[in-house]
Length: 428
Image 1: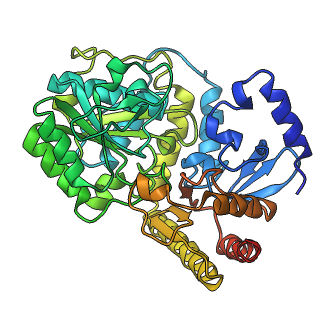
Image 2: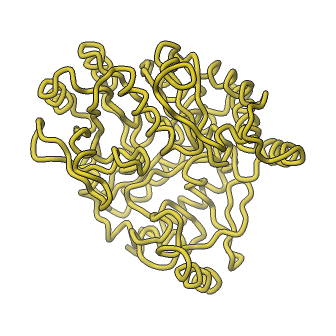
């Protein structure tokens, strides 16, 4: 394929945008080469500025559950825009989508809309601290909750040691309140809670990790977290920015039968437009201003275009009884095909899958946390990525990101993908 136009656009962008991109992963630093500049998308396909078509397995990093330019979502945005794009005032639509989301998600009474997943997680942590009157939080190595200061922390030297900033601009004062545990390791969580008794406001987790590739929770892990939180008065915070409304109507809470205290959403809830939200039961949400003491605000929160897109998306997901089984079946079919091809080539690999999230790790050992995810052969992944790109298949340009399947993907698309992977694997 020819990427002449994308290369020129990237060089032009680099003159006025840091690194030429507005989110670092887009720069292809993890795989090398020049990023693809998208021009349009429809269904399961994205088209670049050079006219190349790609089968899309990132789907805007998750929200395109029903495919790009999904008709009801597009129509809702166009119709809403005719009446104004922003008011800075309440609208009935905000209440309607809130009612629908609360109906779909277990264990929540109220929801607050914001503008991104980062903002949702940041606000949820502030709410948890205000509600519990505690300062510290526990997060997990390899889980990503946005770029708020509290989350840009790397592990310290021991269970009782607080983390250290992993980005300039994050203060040591912020880092001391973020404790780092290991995903799928209850003992690491218990050690932190014991060492910081009555100081931990919340444990925040991606219930299915998507930022070290797809990493499912081990049997009993989420249940164990719930029990530890109950025993210590700590709030359990599910970051369902990726999993919410994608793995099930009620997200991971429904899928695993675990009730979180606060749940964060993004991506799907906006139908692809910039939006986020956090939700909880009344006693927690009523701590938010203007009824409670915890301040949170957003001039463009509840933006009518985003609310219209999200409402159209959630209504369709709520009404289509078979959508989640179709997504899971297509993902399983892809999983089986990739496994068959890579086994035939004698390659070392592990495939993780939950619902419509899947990733290929180039290591034969189980991938259960960030440490094991880092054992993958990144050079093989880079060659794999660029080989698939040449075949017209776009996967995440990082070995540490999950793939997202869309309902618009056909079995013919999946068969082509499997054949392309076979061709690429033979060249590796």
